[in-house]
Image: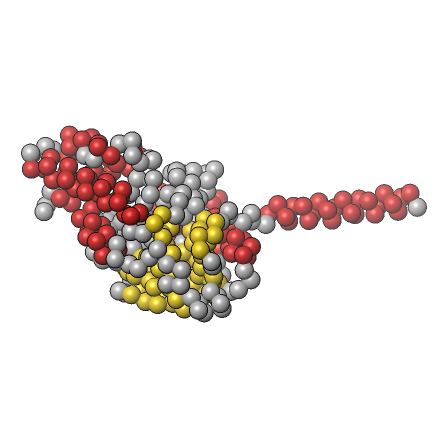
Length: 312
Ligand SMILES: [Zn+2]
């Protein structure tokens, strides 16, 4: 009897051990906040990608309609994508119909592989070409930042539903207005998602708050897109980076001021005949202290703006 009990105890311990291990492997849901009924946001860290944060540096969205769910961006690793999926399951058991990618940057698309083959991936009509051009470069350049094991899981998954101009998706009593912007602004494939039911705009990286804007497309293009973006009938915006929801269109003020300074300083120094290397440390210095990660990205933005405007 004593032997039997010991054996039963050992078996129980094994079963418990196994279940603890399984629970440990189950992804922890990303923390999310309700921004409006049926609209949720996860706010990523204001940081560069590191092995510790696993690329959890961008804001992600979940939109729940009567029949189905859309997610907006998937995070900077498959682990973050799996945790986003767990967050969806924590608020609804409706199926995920759409995974919408706002542009091609790794912190927005590297989690795509967490979502099964039954979802439709949605993006700007330029997104497939951008991913084809830069996907393998991103896998190489993010190996150190994420770690080899995390990179090995990433799949570059292009959209199979392309947006040219405007498209409406309906999740059931929940119409989403998707706008593919041009010309190049933050990137060459910027897409926004407006929930027409609640007035929540998921802006991707066309809107930065707190985190310095990053110019990977065109500074003049971005300023021209901002004029039209401001006219979207939104109420509040979830930015691509920055840990807050902000009123619309006032949310664009800081970013517009930064981009305007970037372009104006670059033009002035070009006109004065100052060479690139001496101009870059002077461009947009009036914005120092107003943005997180200023020294990480301002030199690169200044270089981009100078190179772009030199040929104006
Ligand atoms: Zn981006």
